[in-house]
Image (tube, rainbow, N blue to C red; front, side, top):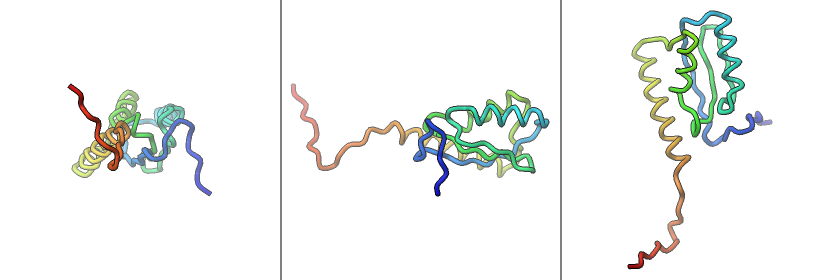
Length: 118
């Protein structure tokens, strides 16, 4: 049986991210996870034992940059390093792509193009 998603999140635009976070105390982690799980665009947010945030969100309305703003507002930050920066760049690219696809107006190929009248 498939997992039911939160009301308001569109499964087609759901993105899953894994982000190593540092600089948060236990109470800050609890507050962050509570805020994320109550956010309308976030489907699920979890903390793994190695201070890794696993999150699934609707990328047509939210992005990884919005997530990082919430983390930095609580005093945390993304772990540094080449690989983390590479993943972050890929996450930003796919978020932008999902948002563009969500706003795209489809058209039919067999439909006659509109005629411009002068």
